[in-house]
Image (cartoon, rainbow, N blue to C red):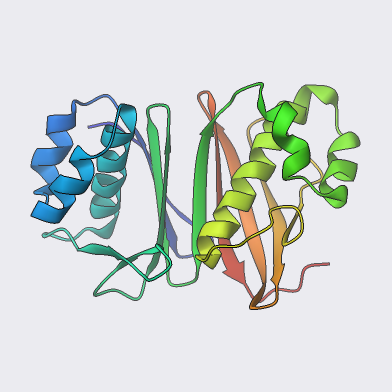
Length: 220
């Protein structure tokens, strides 16, 4: 087994990270896929297949159930467990998968660190975020850009619907980064959804992991 991390975050949310070292068959056997899931998995290409399988295996281990819960998608494509009040979110990238479960809306994202994010950062970072990152040492910029992207992916997943402008509808308040881990806040501001979030980020091997949970706390 390659369970890299399993812990409780935000008081009661469950977080898991899996470093994939197994063959595809390991997860297929462990999951006992339904016919519909088999068809879906068979339609995938490359490493996405095993990353998808590992993320579902991970959420099953986190649930501590004997039999695997059925994971469905709502009308917007947001995953949920059909017989549970828990909100769930998945992510996977370059040999790592991650999942989070909470009684509050949550989102998670894990990204392999790549230099090209500096070219696309202007497409998802707003003025507040650019101002904050400009005050940091340049050696931190690559990590922080990945954190901001991962945070916005996490908020987008917590929201669970389409038509989101990453620059306009989300703002992250990250003002420092020590290169390993950190906490910060964020806001999602759209006509049908105005919520505050608390977030945490950490560096795992060559990846940045970010996860978010909706909060009623006031964001200054």
